[in-house]
Length: 451
Image (cartoon, rainbow, N blue to C red; front, side, top):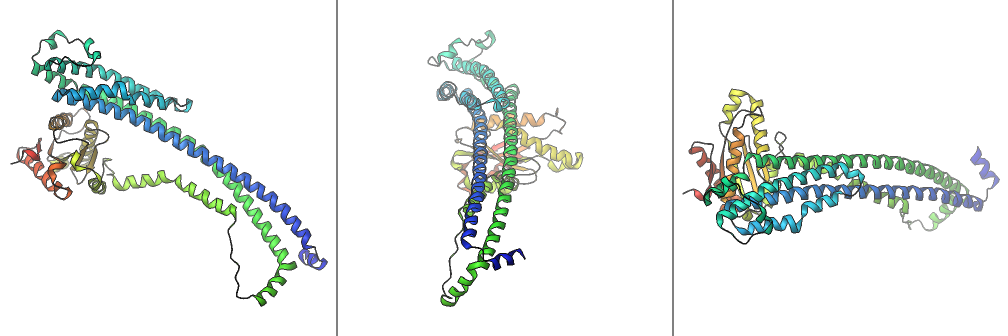
């Protein structure tokens, strides 16, 4: 009735056009402000994500530096090569990755808890260096080196250690950086780092939750504004069509019936599409989590067979030691103690491997009780270091203080250069492992030692 009255009264199109422009400008201003709020929210969310990524990277940098120092001092005590000693002091006093990690973490009050845990990890790392200095001094005395860092000149050996023969000093030094006490201290450093990462994750979740709440509220406002503007535009289109456009279109259709008019999207809608793409990136974390589940074993957390195949296709075998671990008498464990005990044994094995090997090394469960370890960035001259790790693993598996049943593993070891390619790798390492089985189990065999 109202619309018919307007039509009959002959409302001026000019007046309708003026009202359309005024209301459209008002609604457009509101949309622009809403998109401005969205832009600010996305900027804050992006900044928070980048900051949390940097903090997590800083925490890993400290652990990498600590692992690097450990590897250098262990190899120095095993081989007595001064290059490892020089590498150690270059990292500790020139690269200073640990101190840089602390500096990156000191970005504000929100990272104080993560900084506290990271600082504790650094303190424990520094304490561990005292043991490493003493072990290095033992090697220096055993080898008779005279040119070494000035810092080690202040280290004095105990009378008992000073009286040891050179080979005994070497054994004493090696034991100091490969025994249970040393690895227990390393575990404390890892624990502090994990707590630091947990604090960073909690901080990230809280920040993202706040920003997502703000984003949701602003998106609701944008939706409401768009709905109102759409209804208004629809109303104005109907009015304009009834009062003037339809007659013109009918006349034009009669003259130019074969000439279609192309449609172009509004800038606001193109902006919303762009905003949607930005929103998509916020869900990458969820997608990464799904990929993690697809490539990791649910029981132990190690890589599964799919993860192993992916690693095998991407790892540089020429700089990698590959180890095949097979649990001895695993069926007997399940039969005598139950499958739960068997599961606990597999979980313990992975935990022991994680504690002995570096974070860069990869652990894969390729079968029921078979595991592959890729020890990356190593050359085939490091058999002593690998052997020392095997002995440490054997000792820790025999420890039943955690309530698990005692068990052992048979291990086959090969360096990637000796494998002749990925296709021949498993056959050769499997042969080395079965040699360990034939020798009575609870042992390890290098493929290079096979006749």
